Picture (tube, rainbow, N blue to C red):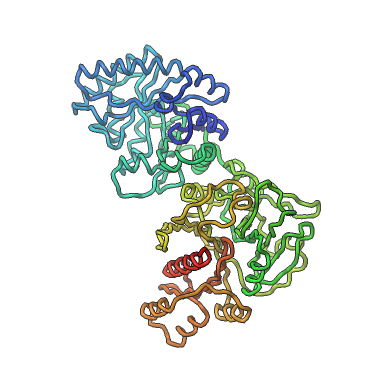
Length: 632
């Protein structure tokens, strides 16, 4: 499948955008007119740069406000078009995007529009240019793709075809069945964009909130399958208007875009050949060359969580207070320890000057990485590489387990561990495993920079086959915190992704290990246990600094659930919070935060599947007060 990206998706100059697209691995780009207009380089120089980068120039866009006008204005529009055709010849681009008229159309007459398209086609023939006519969702008289196709079909000109843009079609909730009527060779270009489900005017939605495929709410797999079935064989391009993308790192956004296309391509690559047949009467024999990715199943659990710290004593004391047992130091890495509480495995890496192999300062306590249990670790790593994830460099002795992983968008590390029903083999590198408690990691809560939140959702969806649940907003003293859970179907892996209202450092490979000391928003590891009161009593006896819970919370709890007074008293004495739904109960307590990490101990009763969402504002407010005390 030929991949392309509109330069409007990316930040930077036109030259920087071309280099980023080529570096990411795109086959071509759409030149957005404004990018060329503001460039100091001539069209010939841009064409030469594209040749040097071995990247095609697939489309020149947009050409606006052309059809549906009176004859005097139409003649002026033809001259304007001819000027652009000459410019395209200098660039070496043979396809122009014609948007349905928004601002100057005065004639709502399909017959006149058809004749004007035909005359434009005659002019385009002289320059060997193809015109891809697109219905803008807010077009004055043409706003639906099927209407645009009817006009193109009636024009019946070899140089006039249509452009299908997923945003303009799906944002209007248009019936997609008529896509099957369009011969693939009359679709001159295909543009893809996803979008979150929002209730707002379509123009603002389009200009500010488009995202890459897999990062929004639409079923683009179905959309692309329908287009592929027409016999379309041209570029599959991204056209995404997004404020964050145009302010972010150019290279990173380009990689995220290509990852979204490769994931989308793979999601339909295994469809039957019968679904890819063109419509009856189509003489097109070309097809999209859809390439699959190595198949991976959902992870079956969390093998371990790794924390890095420059405050080893404080962190390990807190883990001891929670009932974790120290297993030993790594036999070849003396700054690395293993702590267990049943199947909840925490690797603690002490950050010291001797252990620091980077040139940047390392400080604080932060969540460094997660190991996932997968059925085929090699396939998972191969898939990650094809989705342009960056591999984590790792030193290993000759007799140690070979572990491979990649950097997540937030800079944390994701490792793939071959599923082993017994204790993982790598534990032997720390000594003997003797913890027999019934406990495991229930979920890991990760903080995400707001400008890369959608990228993280796509990352975990495409690499690990996790599912994004409905997002919700949680109130905090600093504003609303957006939270979205990524999970496996059976719930063995749960990862709430949170976007805090506070600023974050720019994410990137290795940011956590070489970045600032404390994240603006804390992250945590939730450990499941059999008896929350026993765990809390142990923690109390060992002097744990619990996150304080106000008396007002327990009074409100009593009013909401009408709890037994003795049970309510027990909750309060043990600093335990409580939630209940029709399926079961959820009991949990929080520790104080060390650096940017804290722990949560939980007990699920019955079939409770949530995360105690009603209690989240209590935690956020308590953490806010603690932070204010420490900073004053």
